Length: 460
Image (cartoon, rainbow, N blue to C red; front, side):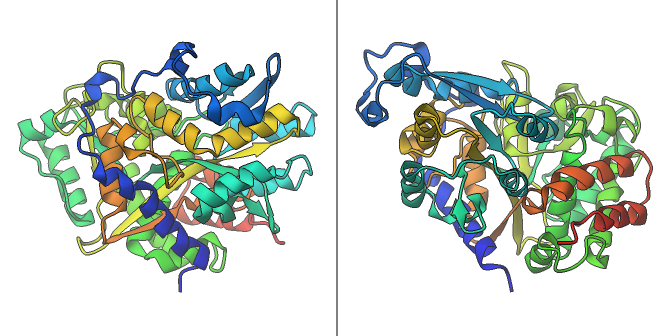
């Protein structure tokens, strides 16, 4: 039986995006995807500051934010702070880092913690709470979460105490491709996993100069995380959600036969020299290719044909790229074993505070508010606008990637599961799992990889 919290997660994500389907038109991506607003321009004359009056006058105060979200994905986040800054007078200092997961514990231990951190793993939240440095969320933040995002509250709770409010939500089970390349070659979107492999074989035979797939897992100190998504997505497809739930909770070992099967299936693509690495080189180049750059070969007239990555990847394509079904790049659902089921891997971030100053409490509360969720939609740009706020105004979503996410997540056949590595203990989920999968890409065999990660699981 699925864990109660994970069953609720599936419902939560469905409710997050259900309202998105009522949007009459999502707009084309060549309009930049984001609306203009007074807050983003710094003009407060047309901003309704009434919702911000409760925060008081914070002029001269600063709040530092540390996150793994870097350029070009950072700008929409920074812009979403503008009404809060303009109406309260506070200054938000944003810092994105590829070394976030490794450096945050170092900074906290060294007494240099940020005021607010965006934690992409609930497992990392538990690790940080264990330091004694994370401040429980203030009542105002809790009230917002209870009102707008109750199904996510458990993921920001450690030992019965609520610390971190949910922020964004994204779909990970996407395969990016070039619609024009598919049309030119006569390729159809695969509906099953076997069809996906058959298509990969056909592309490899048709185009000896290109490759069916391009991939990259380099991400600074977080190198390896994209391969963990591959394993999780495929495990959901080969073993089902109940086995996935047990694996995440370590109710079955990390190297269980079901996981061995899933990793072998991933290897059929990522370790197949006939399939990868389009635009980069051989299989081992996956480890040295940044995840941001990996899919750009899709624009390279057949450099590669497919790239598995989450909805937020839309922001990584160069300015002017049309991200749409009839555009330069688009995405399809990573197929399951058959068309009767639709497992979907999802992820998100959580805001944790390391200081209890009034301005920090105010900003954490703002990030859990309806005002922020709507501002995020306005400033979003190239996709990934879906937040964890169930009451956000869906009419503000302007990007077709978000509409596609909504369609997938509200499909009656869909079963959603939160990113497994994000739920695991930090030492595993953002530690040995990443490292082990990097070693796997560069030549380590399946058994040694899974045994290494299993042996690293905390004993208590």
